Image 1 (cartoon, rainbow over the protein chains, first blue to last red):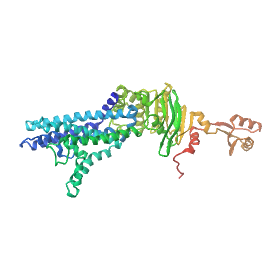
Image 2 (cartoon, one colour):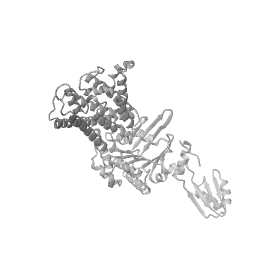
Image 3 (spheres, each protein chain N blue to C red):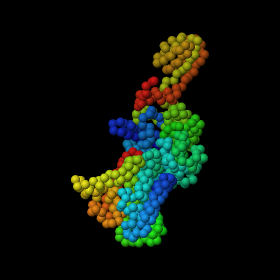
Image 4 (cartoon, rainbow over the protein chains, first blue to last red):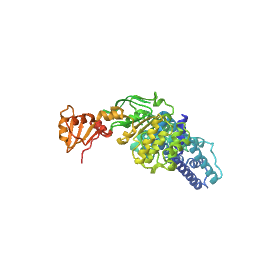
Length: 256
Length: 301
């Protein structure tokens, strides 16, 4: 496993796109934090606005910005192997497929964890610089939102790798992580408010990406349609787990 | 030593590899030949556990999956451009070295060996096919392995490159390594290979030395030039199993060797101006051996 981890570590750090995507994620997060902090400079600082600044939008955005960039790094980790045919040298170097996939996930998770925490830290610094203080970080709901944010980033990153492996390429995986949360789930969510389609309402709690967003929800239960934060997070985690299990099984069974 | 036993693979009803068994000896270059679609790449992928199928391949008695650091024991390149276009050649090799417990400095050594030292820090997206093949060979040699498996390594190389590749593979074989290499360049293979594995539609056609293959699948001919070619042709036609083609003063005779033709000419008082044994080429033998199993056959314009 150590050799596989070393392989993956060199692989991820010698790819220029890794650094571009991480820099983009951090800069966009910073830009979001800065603009919201400046815009709310003279307003009372409730936990909602603090959470929005620190997490880059909280549950108000359909996709968490930083997580999307890390999901793309995850997609590249597996999808590029097929896009550029490197799966052959990879598997003749690390032939045990489960070991390889585990190493990929461990390195990606560590990267996501570090980038997620650095992003939070940078946003804290920006908030302190603009506001001069930062209240309520250890109070509810921020004491749940901040770890929820890190978990969400981790789950998106793993999902990216799982989708890249499942589709054995990059484009289809990118379509899923962008179109499903931004179009498909938003449509179902909106339609659930139409009286004739109210039977959709119970489905909404099981929309995986929307459920995942509840990990960073800043105001308790939204519209009463979702499970609580951690159960909703569990729905998203279950979705990620299912995609990963299918991708893993197919990786072990299919020709490289 | 590579020992492949009963390799087989099918896609639905189509048999891609049909019960192939062969050995590749150390100290030799063994060529792997077959028409397009014969199953050469699939066989190599089966040997390296990249594809799932039946049969067993042993490398010095061990299966590929049982080898802890395969790159140190088997250098394999199945695709010419199997690298990320924005990762430098050096980093590509350092990545593979990291996964095999090989010092990173080895990447520079093999890049020097294949003549890519000057471009080692460049992104390989602009590499020609020939440069990509050289990077592939560097990848195969990274772990200084005793066994090499190369699929079409000469594709895209210029004549100097092909000559260089032949010298490299011959010298590696002379060091006692086991070299298994596929190629469509039959003239090159005839200069490079000691042994051959020839397949068609996934099945074994021939496994043995190059000369034996040529002997088995071609008929050697004797070229005769004589002012009395027609008289000699009549005399030769009187022998059983002899084929004679007469064209002007020139005869092409098959079914007898050069000594017999000389004797018959002497006995019939026929003056000869040329008497030459013509050995058939590997290409002629290959075409004869595989014409019945060609997968994709085009017409003539």
